[in-house]
Image (cartoon, rainbow, N blue to C red; front, top):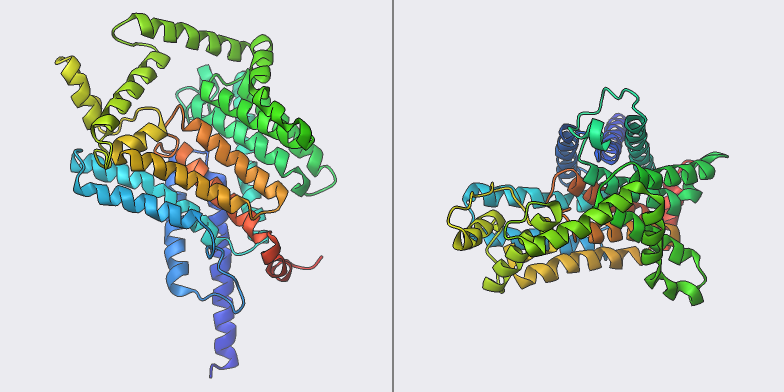
Amino acid sequence: MPTIHQQLLASTLQNKTINFRLIIICMAGAAVGLSMAIVSITKLLLLMCGLATLLLTRRAPGEKNLLAGTFTPIAVLLALSAFALSLLWTVAPQADALGSLAKYGKLIVIVLMMQLIRDRREAMYALGAFILAQLFLMTSSWMLFVQLPVPWATSNMALTKYAVFSSYLDQGIMSAVLAAVCWHLRELAPGRFGKPLALLVATASLCNVFFVLSGRSGHVVAIALLSMAIMWELPKRYRPVVILLPFLLTLALFFSSTKVRDRLSQVQSEVQSYSSTVQPDTSSGIRLNLWSRAVQAISQHPLVGSGVGSWSTEYNRLQREQNPAHQDIAGNGNPHQEYLMWGVQLGLPGLVMICALMLAILRDTLKMEQPYARAAQSVLLALAVACLFNTSLYDALIGDFFCILIGLLLALGLRTAPDHALATRQSEPSA
C-alpha cells in the first residue's frame, strides 16, 4: 500500500502532466494559421504528448473515454490504413509515396485532440487560444491592407495580397471559418461585452474575406457558411430558401465588393480562354486541365487507384502521351481538388472513403448540443467546399488548420453533451 508521501508525489506528477498536456493543447489551437515552423513543432509535441498519455497515464475511475461510440476515429484510421496499404502497388517513387503518406498523417491530429482534451474546461481554453491567434492573424491582415507596418508578416504575398503567414487562399478560408465559429459560439464569450465582441470579430472576419483578401476559395466558403448561418436562423418553414441564398449573396457581393466582382469576372474570362486554347495558362485553365487529367487517371485505375503519392507520376505520364516535350512537375504536386486526389491514389473507393470521413464527423456532431454542433458542422462544410477547389487536407497549414479545429470542436461538443454533463460539472472549479 503506498505511503502518504508516495500518494502526494504521484498527485503532484499527475498535476504537472495535466498542466503540460493542457499547454500543448492550447499551443495546438493557437498554432494553426501561424508560421509553418510553429505548426510543425506543435504537431510534434502533440504527437509526443498523445503517445505519453496513452502509455503512461491511467484514466480516472468513472471517466468516460470520449472516443468510445464515435465514428470519426474509425474513419481516420481506415483512411490512413488505406493509404499505407496502397504503398504495395503505388506507381510513385518511394520518396513521393512516403511523403504523401506523411502529409495525410495529419489526420491523426483529429483523434489526438479528441483524446487529449479531458473536459469542457480544457476545450474552452484551447478554443480561446485558437480564437485569439486567429484574431491576431485577421487584425494583421487588416493592418497590411491599410498599409501599417507588420514586421512579423513572412508571406511573400503580404504587401500585395495582405496574407500574413500563408497564402491569401488559405487565409481567406481561415477568416471565413473564424467568423462562423464566433457567430455560433457567441454565447460562450466571457464577460459583459463578450457576445458583442464575438459578433464584431465575426463581422470583421467576413469583411476581411470579401473586401480585403482576393482568394476565390475563401469567397465561396464564406458565402456557403453565411448561407448556412442564415438558414439556421430562419423559421423551419422558410429554410428551403437556402437553395437561393448563395446566389443572392453572390449577386449582392458582385455589386458591393470589388474583390469579389473582379475575381468572378476573371473566372469567366479564364474558362472561356481555356475552351479556346490548347495550353491553359490561367488559374482556372490550369485547374480544369488538372481535373481532366485526374478524371482520366481514375478511369484507368478505378478499383484501387495508382497508389499513395502517385498524382505527379500519373499526371506526367498522361501529359507526355499528348505532348512528348512536357516538362515534368515535381513529386509533391496535386490536382487542386481533394476528392480527385483521393480518387487518383485509391480509385473509386478513395472517393467513397473521403466522403465517409466527412459523414463520420457529421454523424458525431449530431450528438452535440445545438451551438457546438452548428460550429462543428460549419467547419466541416468549409472543408467540404474548400476541397472542391484545393487539396485542403493534403496541403500543409490549411490541412493542419482543419484537422486541429475539427478535433477541438468535436472534443468541446462531446464533452458538453448530455451524457458528459455530470463529468463536466465535477471537473470545473466552483465559482
